[in-house]
Image (cartoon, rainbow, N blue to C red; front, side, top):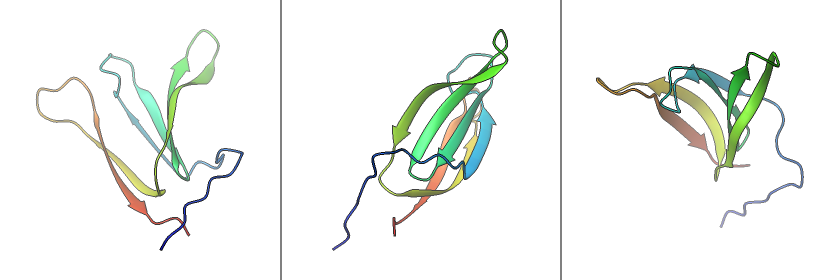
Length: 86
């Protein structure tokens, strides 16, 4: 049996980061993996900051991220591999 535990604070160290067009618009977004959390961020040119758009917890630790695009598609797809939480 494996137990899955969550902490009160979300993970903060970025382990992986990729750039792609995940929202279907012409602008690029940054997708970061922080332990067991995926965060999609965009660059706000007016503020000069990176603004998080959405974050999502996954069941496991994200080991690798890769982006690919199918022929004729206008947005990027995400390929990720997981490892068990220890």
